[in-house]
Length: 132
Length: 288
Image (cartoon, rainbow over all chains, first blue to last red; front, top):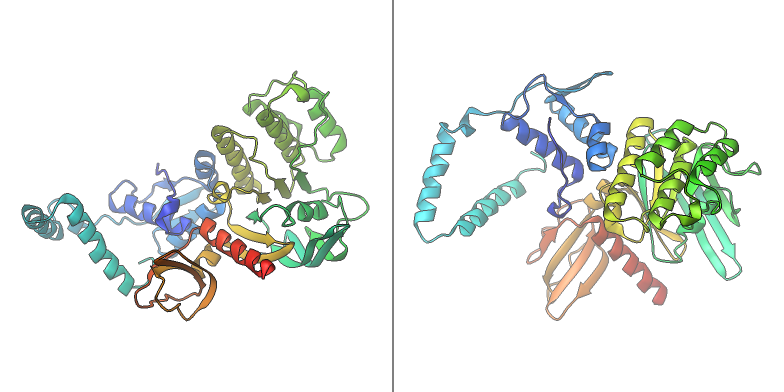
C-alpha cells in the first residue's frame, strides 16, 4: 500500500503533494486499478498528518476520475496512469536518454543537467495552470 | 461558511482585565471537524480565548458560542474539553484514581478509551500523579480530556513538555480522533513548525485582536513571498510586511494572482513565514 509523506519545504500544498504522490505511484504501476488507498485514519495513524488533508487529496483524485470512493469500503483506484512513452522502450524516453548522453559528454556536470532539466520544466509549468 | 454551523463562533468578543483588554473585538468562526492552529505571542489572548470558550471566565463584551450554545451557568459545555497549560490534575491521586474521578465527574465518560490512551503512553496506573514526568502528566491529562469524548477539544500549549517521539504519538492519537469522530481541535503553540502538518485552519491573534483567520491552504494561496534587490520598486499589491538587508528585500504581499513583477523572485510562503510576517507587522502597528 502507498505511504504518503509531506515535504514542508517544497512550497506545494500538502494535499497536492498527496495527489502528486498518488499519481506518481499510478504512473510507475505501484498502484493498479482495483487497489485500495489507505483510509484517512490509516494515513493519520502512521504519519500524524491532518486527516482533512488526506480527504481533500482523495476528493481531488476522485474528481480527476482516478479513484472512486465506495461507501463503507474505502477508496479504490479506477484507472492506471502508466504510460507506454515512459516505459524503458518508449520513444520519448529514448530521446531523453540521447539528450542526456549529449549533455553529459559535453561541458555539463550531473548537477548542471539536473538544474537545466528542472528549470525548463519549471518554465513550462509557469506557462500552464497549477496542478496539471 | 459552507460546512454547517461553527464549532466556535465569536462575535465582537472582548475580555477586560484590571490591567487592560486581554481580548478585544474578536469576530471569527471555527468550522467543525477541523484542526485550528491558534498562534500568537505571549499576551496575545490565546489562553483568555480558551478560558472564555470553556466558561471559566465571562466575556466583558460580545458573545461566544460553543457548538451553538453560550457557555452558561452550568459550566463547561458537555461536549467540550479543555486542557489548560498547567494541566490541572490531583497530584496525590494515582493515575487509576484520576481515571475513576474522570468517570465520576463526566457524564458520557469513556473509561476504556481513556485507560487505553494511558496504557499506550506507558504510564504506570498505580503511580501518583505528582511523581510522573512532565511528559507523562501531559499524556494522562490528554487521556482525561479525550475520555469525555468531546466534540470540541481545546489544547493550550499541549506539546511543551513532550519529547519528539511523544509529540508524534500524541498527534497521531489526536488526528485519529479527528478522522474517526470528526472532532474539532484548537491547538495553541509558540512553535509554529509543530503545528504545520496537523492544522488546516488558522487563527492568528496579536494584542488581543484577530490578525488573520481562515483555511491555511487558502491563506497560503493568497500570499506571495517576493525576494529581490532592495532598489527594486515594491510590487503593486497589498504589502503585509517588507524587510530589507543591505542589498536584499523580502516582501510578503497579499494577492491571489501571480505577481510577475520584474526582477522579483516569487515564492509561496510557509505557514511560519506567513504567521511571522503578520505578527511583526502587527507589532510595528502597535509601536507606531
